[in-house]
Structures are given as C-alpha cells and as structure tokens.
Image (cartoon, rainbow, N blue to C red; front, top):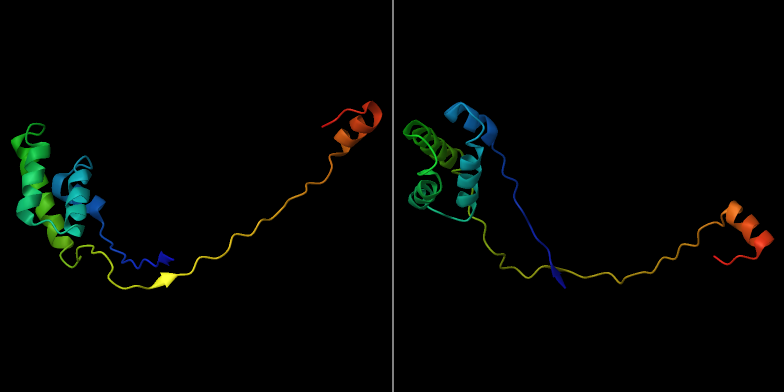
Length: 122
C-alpha cells in the first residue's frame, strides 16, 4: 500500500523580491534559501546565522546589508507558510496489478524481401 500525499502550493515571486531588494538576481539564492528554511521550520535567528555562515566571507558590507534585508523580506512574505510535517493519517492507495502489453511490430517490407531472396535470418 502506498501512502497518498497531500500537498500545498506556495506561491511567491521571489525573483521580483530579490531584484527589488538587492538590484540583482545573484541574491535570488538568499530568497530561495529563506523560503526553504521557512518550510522546514527554522527561526529567523537560525536563518540569519546560516546566511552569515554562507555569505560573510564573500560579499561587501553593502551586499551583506541588502541580502539581510532580502532575507527578512522573504521571511515576511512567507509568513503564512506552515512548516512541512509528516502526515499522520493512514490513507493509502491500493496498487494496481502490472499488465504485460505485447507489441508485435509490422514486418518491414524491405527486410521481408531480403529474407525471402537470401534466406538471411534476422
């Protein structure tokens, strides 16, 4: 028996948010990372610590400030998103039996003519 998964669709234009907050799309990974962190239930403190670990040695102070603003804006935009949890119900789908379907392709006329005249095997 296979569990039936239910899912929610979350929509946010993080590309536009990254462009608006940082004036570049190179920070899109910050927005996507924050949205993902939100879905697994990380706190803003956890997210900022992760962002610090990932970006501190690679960006200028101005870029850091913009990425931090983007992270906070993304967290606010995704405020209604609940963390993903394991399902606790027992709804299952009954698997269907596998059915063999045979395909017998039509005979290639050219091959049939060669076979008839030469006795060649396929």
